[in-house]
Length: 480
Ligand code: FAD
Image (tube, rainbow, N blue to C red):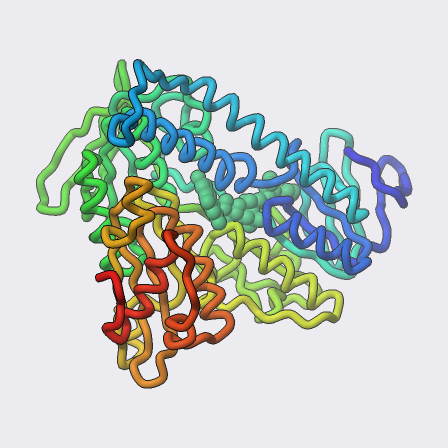
């Protein structure tokens, strides 16, 4: 256990006194909150049970997956280099080397978080944290038990991969996001259960690495939280590249066999199939880590497993806040966790902070083609009673997309008819997760479609497609 200043030993137990805020969990929510608390001059401790800081995002989520995704993109360029007029003899993919690179990048950035804790005078306390009563967090580690006393607690314990009942992960055949990030060999046949953000991301990566991928999704469409047209485009693009997509599929059983796994599934039309694969990735959502952290010792309310919070991220127990993947009502994304942490700390420090607004959160799905979205889908805008006008622009008509050789997809703007309010923007295509930034800023600044039509977009760029989609709301796109 790291002994932070102010430790008193009381008959084998240690008590640390008088923190302004103790944060349980060091993922993007917890560590961002800790940095901001330090910046505000609050006496802060961060409790982490794992050896390294950074949480799911840093170690088995956002960062390592993007290393694999980037490698898949580079590999794709090598394989298709002839299309660019470059002859490239016998390129070879070396998965162990990619995994090594992934680990170097993760370790470097996890160290960066340690540095940030020191820089902002945040005490790091290693061990398992649990709320034991008003203003008390007990931390258990190999070295004993410590009780931290504090005016405020921020719970940032994150989430874990859900598995199907009776199923246990292993390093080679039954995989979650943890095991798949350390494979030594590309599976020849990979079945993926779950067509949400995690499932489609790994489908894109391993398909390009050479796996024959089958994607099984229970709901009628892939990326089900996205605009319907975006889901359709993704399915079309996946099918075209050879990823087998089975929306509406119900997985009944998974069996380990001598050489791999068998997945028994009922397909959308009712047909039953026993799917043979070398490995299966289970990507059926993430369960919030709310058990065993002492919430029962508070008045915090739980809603379908998630913690209920107010606009300041405070639970029903004054002085106990919750942020990130454990919170009800906001998507499980790293930037959401981080922002919720800042909102909680601002409230603790008595500073102004806008509550997190669900309609201004960028949704990002890192597949090929990528997805970036913000605000209302067309269906939701209509359901909410808006008179909707749509603008759409295909990447096929964007010169930079052609230069890069990625012309799949489109930008879609959902606007309100009378005043041109931007209700939502949905992008599927090259660098969609970067391009969505302009739309998020536009919505945050309450810009209208007209403002965005008057915004000059550099040429040739991918984000010209965003400008053109705004133009198209009034039928005024130049290049389509
Ligand atoms: P977490 O990151 O889950 O961290 C929680 C921390 O709390 C952990 O370190 C854990 O050890 C610690 N902890 C838990 N209980 C205790 C305890 N009792 N005591 C002490 N410590 C404890 N999001 C994006 O925005 N972009 C992406 O590209 C993206 N890609 C992803 C890819 C994958 C494969 C996965 C699985 C997720 C991805 N996400 C992505 C989601 C993102 O990782 C999560 O939304 C984010 O990590 C949530 O942050 P958090 O702070 O709530 O908790």
